[in-house]
Length: 619
Image (cartoon, rainbow, N blue to C red; front, side, top):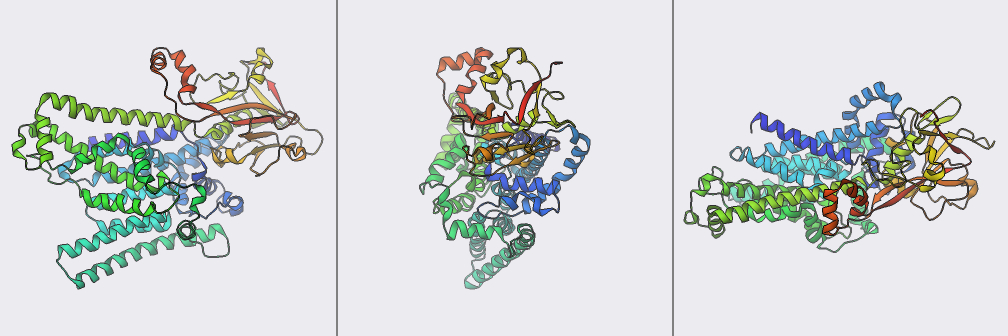
């Protein structure tokens, strides 16, 4: 592949991944551990007692290795930014962008390694198509930059798949073994399948008997053992130090015991045995599934490459084996089969590549009689017929591309609203922004409050989507366009000037992380679980409440300050509404919440006895 083309694809891949980071920077509960760990590595260093996992350890321990690598990679940029712009930040959201942007760059490098593994005879077309197909799978592109163990595993699986395509199956097995023992134990299924393929290939190629079989088994075991040693040597000392439980810690061993031996994963929901095949795979690949059969076509006459990739072994090892094993467990999630979806996306790319080969002018010179395969004869006949070539083959390929892009865009748009508490805390950081010596907290003097804050359900701009309750907006119409801040007040109980924000369980799971906690203020964030709103003594110490409850204010002390929209479900509009949205931008603004069925999900209340709204009369 030419250097210019390689750079273009690198830029495209990075733009897609970073673009998804910018659209949805916040994190949910699944990635909370790694996100909090990266924050603590960056800002708490060796003060382990200040780390989030000390207070909130989670159900099973997780490794700190991925978080440490990401924190070290992000540290120079984060440090420089804190030194130059730290005094301007309401919170550490910019550091969050840097961390996830670094993850995007690492993922882009892995995808570059994957496309460079393609045979030289297929370049530059096949690497380009592979990049388009993989990045076109929304779940893969989106989760490449999320801080889940599955995402770390997906990046390493991408490197392993590249090695496999190059024929380095034994090395690919070592990478997957390391990944399974450190990040995702369920990847052992792929590692085992790779080992079996190595053994089978050695026996077949050398027509050997028992001696060849035994030798191959020994080689595979020693290679796997070597990778396992690397994994446990890196994981166990670090995690034993970080978890401080007075015992040797191998987190992924705990996870394997919890999920596979005790089979407790069902507590998070169950799916039927066929769910990965009939649901997850279809959602993961979408219309790209239609390209899979085309990958089995032989090359057209005159093509330089006879077999692009080892398709059947690839599907068996990377999809059939892990999906078969994981289907035995009751709890199923699409993220568990990301490496399998990646492999199928590569196979789909091979199908698109074959179709493009048959559509080329060189291949169209040969008629069906030049082929032995019935499928190849049909493809050659359709490629030579102008009507069929245009109406079926080219239109079909273009249609698949369009539907893929539309689905990607719809899912990306929906993902924006999956983190309502992240936007709520970001907005609250503006309201509770900087402390002055007299105890007042500025919210708009330096940075104006978000235009939606006083907009009375006005959804006229994109991010963050914040809906202000009508009561505050309508209290004094003369202040509707004023900047304001919140001034802390007290009642002589020793809590004057203190700002405590309570975050309930739902809010803690849907976007709030330490990166979005207010800084440069006297505010603290409290995540006490089981807080009873009827306990007035406990409630009175909080200046703000962030909760999913909206049935009624906690007490007469509190009033709703604002709420944030969250994604509920996707609703298809009737055709006239779609046409009106396309033609009239004003209609689009009014219908956008209907289109995605958005609804307020996180509600922020202020304590009237501890805070008061002060408007900037100079604004």
